Amino acid sequence: MHHFTVAELVRGLRSGDYSSSELTQHYLSRIDQHDSALNSYITILAERAIAAAQRADTALRKKDAAPLTGVPIAHKDLFCTAEVRTTCGSRMLDNFISPIDAHVVEQLDRAGVVLLGKTNMDEFAMGSSNENSYYGNVHNPWDEYTVPGGSSGGSAAAVAAGLAPIATGSDTGGSIRQPASLCSVTGMKPTYGRVSRYGMVAFASSLDQGGLIARSAEDCALVLQSMATYDKRDSTAVDYPLPNYMATLTQPLKGKKIGVPQNIYDSRLDPAVADITLAAIDQYRQLGATCMDITLAHNDYAVPTYCVLAMAECSANLARYDGVRYGYQCDNAESVEDLLVRSRSEAFGDEVKRRIMMGTYVLSSGYYDAYYHKAQCMRQVIRDEFVRIFDSVDFIAMPSTPYVSFNLGEKVNDSVQMYLGDTFLVGANLAGLPALSYPAGFATSNRPVGLQLIAPWWHEAQLLNAAHIYQQATDWHRQRPPIAA
Amino acid sequence: MDNQTVQNIAQLAHIKIDPTDKTFIHALRDILYLTDQLKNAPVHDVLPLYNVHRDHLHVREDIPTEVTSREALQSLTPKFHDGFYWVPKIID
Image (cartoon, rainbow over all chains, first blue to last red; front, side, top):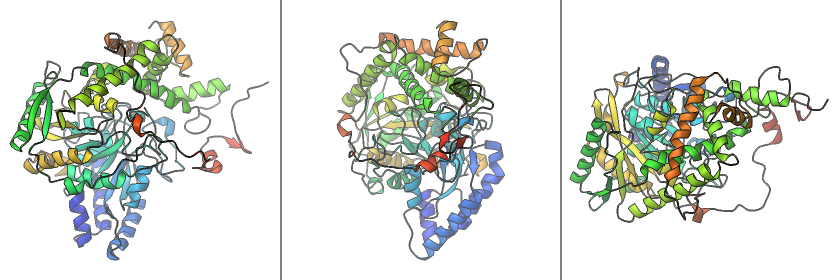
């Protein structure tokens, strides 16, 4: 059953091929059997999931099912869940039980999902390898000695390993697409403002966007439909018409124009990744699309711009962790200052501390104009460049990452190398564009490569359509690591 | 970024760092070097972008709302007593 897509599971549950209880028990057994090797979950909710599955079975029997009734799911552990702890991968929130459900959690509950558990992640979503979690690193199901990517590494590893059919993620600077690429699954970052951030623990509020990690574009379409409802509780959510994603999934690509950036194919890109990307683009030509050369002239500024803005926002957002109102509190504080400083210093990991400090630096008097203001101006330049490009093309196709999965520990002490790995990803975040990463091949037998497709604002339907057509013509997304055999 | 600046920033950020932790401090300097690439950014006469959807921003009605109850929020604190958050003594 763990080979089935969500679309197949919905059909199987409705036709009575299996019950939600059987399906949920199957996934829980797999988690019990395999997750000690992967560490993809922080919290497993066996009893709660079985009870929810029994309720789903009752609804299915009464023909009173919602769109996803009985389908198991995992949530990245930054989506707040009432009654279940939300750690955000941090000691700071080790015992934090939110009084609210995130909008995403509410909507998917309403759609009938069964929550299996909450997945591991880099602390406060800061990282590209899932080595920054207080709960230990996650292993890539394709090779346990390599990283799954991050920060949604637990979600990507769980879906790739058949420990969840689908999982939520968040993407501030590539945190859905990068692990999706490294684990050979499909990861979707919607347009900024499409999915409410209400109840999603904040890292960089102008960039954070909830999304999905799944086995196929079709599954992303099916679940995004229930997740992307407008929510006025998030002041940056936009009440933009929500199309029927499934209705346009199979439209032919003839006449679609794909922009292919030429200036990114240099020595910084793994040749195997370049070859696979170009082969995938060639596949699109065969599917009827027209591919056109374009230039992303400002892409080299994207990572420095992202770093300044994300770190500035992180330092402001994480100032709320004061050891008083909620979260970790140190023992035997001698003064309020001691309580504040020691609580934060004992509970935050090194990468979070670095980003808070850099954010404090770029916002401080004397440096604000040189860094923060300049980065905001550069963000405008990058956005304008995408506007111009999308005047002449429907999509941009490029690699998700410049490399394949690397060994655990290999880059953990080199923050800059880690950040530069997001060089093809952060542009979509800075501009607020929707983007997908999906399997396009393997550099070696256990080193997957993902293709990234970026579309204009609010064009998720077109993006899912283009990825679905590719997935109908190829079988890279059906490849499974041995652990999921 | 000299050692004194690192300590000043740490104090502003309410984080204590070990001044002998060279790995941590070198990483900060490497990140600063990366962000210094913005010095050459082509932003002459460009206005900053503060929101990618400036045409879609909505303003909520000016009506007070209570999303979460006071009791629920106060139950999250590690130390709470008699309606107050407990912190170490501030005034002697």
